[in-house]
Length: 169
Image 1: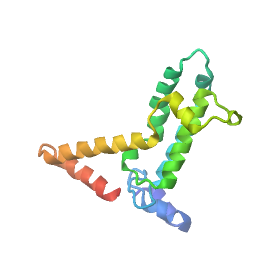
Image 2: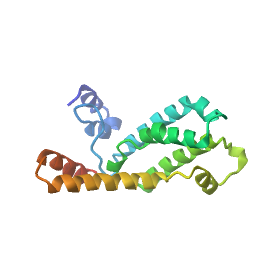
Image 3: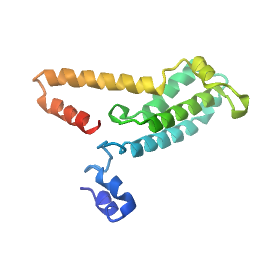
Image 4: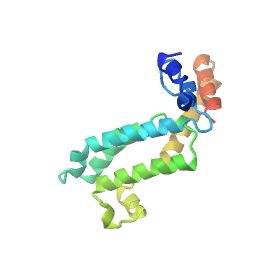
């Protein structure tokens, strides 16, 4: 066990967090509510990345498609890192979708006092929702697990992915 996890166990408010650290110091085991720290961490990192690219979003010379591709590759990849293993509740999904909508509005240059509906923002950007992206990632991971578990070429990886699925439900 890492030193950070053993130090955190001394404090009662951090006891649950410490129980979910693995040897590298990352939270990996997802129980009923244990993926919330991962979601909050990913939103924070993605928010920092989003605000560091403010000059890009404000550029008038860049086309909208270029900005959206940058958003998908730089921001969404951070936001949805390891999302196929998350146990999502409605509250968590709402947080992710709210952050996604806030980012889309920033890219389009929509201010809060413009009173533009979310449906119009979605139509303008024409990007899939966070829920759809997570569902696609889960389906592709599941397909990978099924293929690997049915073949006897690499039994170690098949067992590894089976453990992830049983733990993350």
